[in-house]
Amino acid sequence: MKAEQILAKLNELRKEAQGDDTDMEWIALHHAFCFISYKMADFQKYLDEVIKNGK
Image (spheres, rainbow, N blue to C red):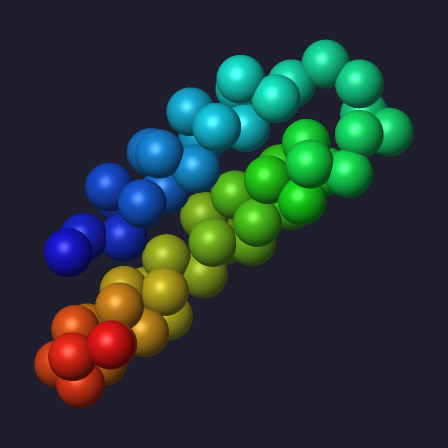
């Protein structure tokens, strides 16, 4: 599984929830998207480990 696929889905969910910047769902999605975008290599490494371990 590629990190880009998950990031794309997260961005889609973020766009659907967009609107009120006081909405906790949007805030959570937005900051998760930003953080994962910033740490793509680490996130891919995490995904590789999870898949390798069958979780």
